[in-house]
Length: 110
Length: 116
Image (cartoon, rainbow over all chains, first blue to last red; front, side, top):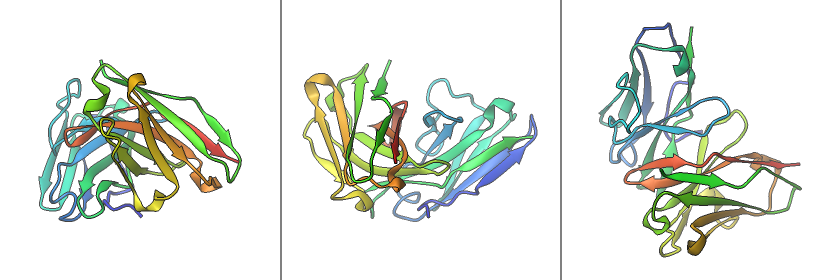
């Protein structure tokens, strides 16, 4: 049972916009910077967004993030087949004094 | 360029211990915490603990306290994660990741550990 809640799956067709949600509490999402990771099959997680909506160098602007209260979301616009991957949200939890993750969302590009 | 390179795959018997290394390059090793995260087959990410390479201070997830030990050799720029009393439920890929600001980046390539 993950501390942060994500839908287990999401899907879209090429070119579409897809949103993945992540909900937590005041001790994590509500009070800390949220980051998002993309994990391709057999690979290590790769940082996609940090501080809710900041993209590291090299991440396309098709990826964006937003936050409202204790919930956050990742949006992917102009969906490409190469976006098919698992996506995880993460945040520092002040009550647990550790990192917490969502259970992951498997994105399928139809 | 910042890299974390981990040691190779391990196969251990139940009850044994495993020690995984994580060598940092491209930055000053003692500047940022190293965290350890594991991922069981087909499962999500699970945080295990952090270590400050400068001071050696550590923090562990409650689930792993008493069973995991994080250490480092600063002259080698290398962090270590040792997990003891292994069971089949510890079969997973173990990752190290640098804490940079308020996020984890980059991650090592992962070390598969099989307990059988």
